[in-house]
Image (cartoon, rainbow, N blue to C red; front, side, top):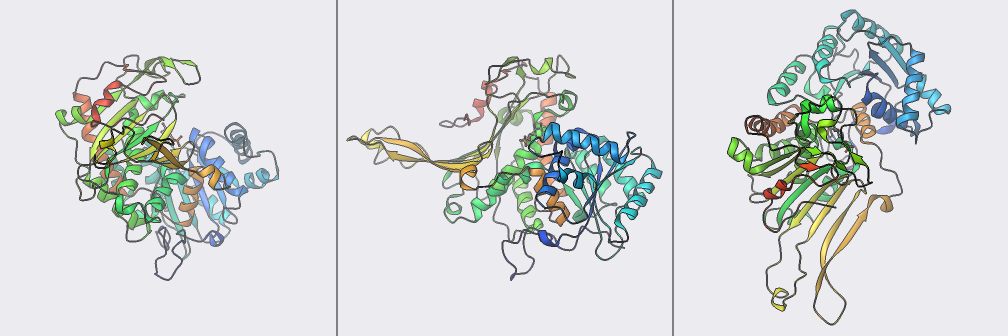
Length: 524
Ligand code: BG6
């Protein structure tokens, strides 16, 4: 018996002589058959993300041969009726994929349904039996995907352990578990979840998903930083004035009011997606591209973030907001957060949050990292804005030349994926005038390939046994250590007068108070 996540892990070769561009885990062409066991199979995430990702991977030939999906869920369904439901989801949520052709028929034939309560030990025995039948004596390679609400995680994990499904028979077998966010709601609950997992699955079997890490443009942060000589010498407090990370969404609750009421934007976006981006921007070069080498460096960044603790520090370094009614950029009148379904009409949940973080380490001492995230903002954009220091005020300033601006490197994570660098240039004409111009790189025009959904990459990596793009236990806890004291202080501090920004705007004015002079928030 072995209970491992697969022998070969990491984004990079384990020996010096392998190709440095090896993408970790097994090579695509070598991925052996495996089965994905899906919990939460009738939920929203399955319909909108997981099944479209799997079917898209199937059409691209990215799934291993004899790949199978076994859904484990409570509702009474048969294999056939479940397949029909999935076909309907593809039509509804992934219309770019053809759910009516031969490929769908082939894919659907490898999907099975096991009906059981999530808390029924006998159901897990049936699951085990079904897996053995489907594997037909081949090695047991099983990926358990927990896409349920987090309340069920503990029950499922314990039953998997009791049924022995946390281990795989045979030398080539493996058992891995993917856990969806939210991974805890604060430091204590994240620790509890890690403690619950540890006796059942080893760390190298656990894949904590943060779908931001599956985005091409997020992965490109490391490539941009470490595959180009020109950035690294400037990537520090000597040359960078401040860094801004923005995760702005135009959507409101979209039926998720009940979840969001308890989460708020800080738990939903900042603790995970925004801090993941921050760590990739701020980390030291890892000693290899191996999963643990990358994650070691990310944890070091999180640990170097100066704690924002106590009422005074929290009041000075954070701003919360909640949207009221307003008009979107498309001219649609929309209601305020408190009028959304399943939301308390007096809710104090934040739909916008902004933070000023400082990293107490050699590279970033004195450089503020501003982070803002919000729902129902003016424009959908996720970006990183790196503002360099101004040039010394000689030469052009002496000529009363007003246009000299600091250089700004913007990484556009989505939409309009790419990067741009603002540089000062001479305005044509007899006078010496400087004007900022943009050097621009766009994924769309530079590569003749569509940007795939993040879930495709992440599921493939979990199948291959590459955990580089998944969060490790200490990483998740370190992120919660930063966020939890802020959430606690907000609970005690008097809440701002909500709503304090209009839907369709850029958030509360108060967010400007966090910025140092000469800095403005990203408003693309
Ligand atoms: C999810 C959040 O993790 O990320 C959602 O729960 C949010 O509230 C979503 O809308 C954003 O993801 P993306 O890929 O659309 O930026």
